[in-house]
Amino acid sequence: MADVTEKVRQVIAEKLQIDAGQVTMEAAIVEDLGADSLEQADILFSLEDEFGITADDTDEAEGLKTVADIVAYLEKKVGAKS
Image (cartoon, rainbow, N blue to C red):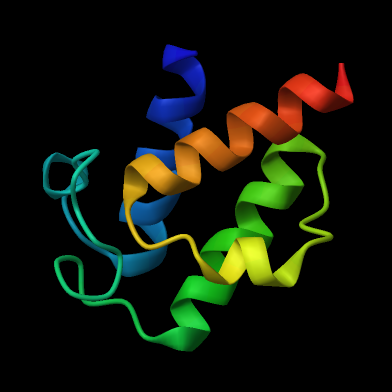
């Protein structure tokens, strides 16, 4: 789902006010991209709205450390929704 990956990269870049080129699949949201806990939550809420899903498992959502983790999580949620 290339569109999921691209949308995730766009949302993260926009929310953190960084260049989308910095948002690689391996990038850690906190360590590499500099997000704090409020920004992490804002990113997740924005992605929920964008994809029409709800992060109902907070433990799973809290375990999302990298861009790849977020993409995999969203692909699973979007796939389960359809």
